[in-house]
Image (cartoon, rainbow, N blue to C red; front, side, top):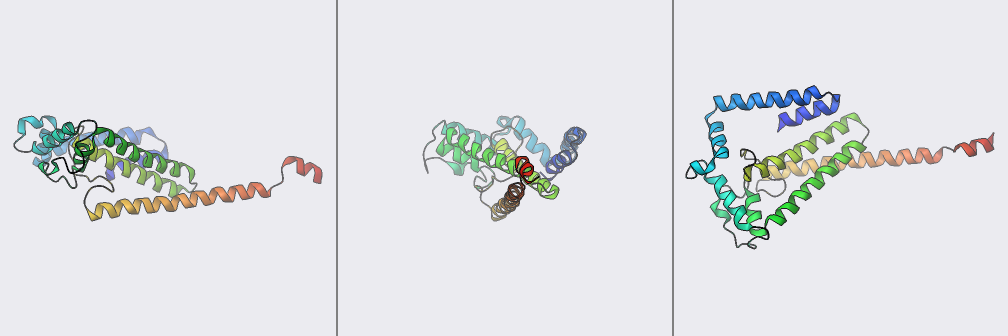
Length: 218
């Protein structure tokens, strides 16, 4: 997550695509090396590639997640009507699967749209604020927030290998909730700074006479 934020910030700060594509290439190479060097990475990759072949072992968690999502269908089974305890570590890593099972795929899509709405609002704050430091800070927090959502939902739906990242403001875990609240607090502060800058600009423009007034004074 830190690497992705760093690469995007380098791209935003310089506007040079080489940082973006170079980061993607370096990340791909690092993933390949990690697969070759670390056994637990290989276990997660195998569980992602074909969880059904290792359903009684490393693939149990992801298969139970997919079963829960399928069982929930579009409208869900209803609150407390699902079987979230069948999924290991459901309260943190795989909370999205339990939500989809009990409330349905439509509810899950709405939840994703809420996260996207927050991300878009964060980007708007980053574009509106003038200070370079605040702008890069806002862009960094924006990427960190939405990439965390992507890792969590992508992992439980078998779109990407599971990484064990929590879902912001939903998964169990005090440090996860605290860090997300810090992001929101900092973004709120940057929003206030951007709003104050707009007010000052409007006051300056209001205090300056237009061209017709200048001609009258002349």
